[in-house]
Image (cartoon, rainbow, N blue to C red; front, side):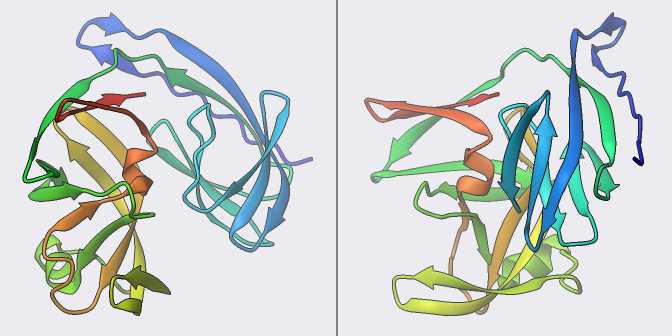
Length: 212
């Protein structure tokens, strides 16, 4: 059995060693766009873009191997590859967003480039138009074809993986996004490929996003 051993040592602040949790990960099944991972002794089926409760994100998968993200690091694994990884504990960060015109708008960044977001819990993944993608300098050469459902019906689009998305002090790595042709959506939609990685609450026109 092929085994890969990797340990992450991370710091929560200068001069302070962060508390950590060791997570055991083994690839036990590979499929097109999905993988079965044994995480701490429990088998979990993850589809591309899904993240386990332990924080393991599946980036890609086929019969030959899988790519996962663990605590900000990307790894290529094959069947029976085994990892012992240290996840860093962190102090949760909260971002407060006030409702305006029955919508929640906020600012943030994509790969370090400042952007405006419209929070859309009905969007399966983060979505933007082709002009946004050009302005952000996204590499579309590896984008995968997909269909996005809009109010006008299905639209041929492209799916990309964004390395980093920030809202306030909340950072999420490896976020799936849809790039739609033309000018729709006018504002970048912060969909569930980002939002499923945070805790959300809403009360009296105030939305709170809290890092996990």
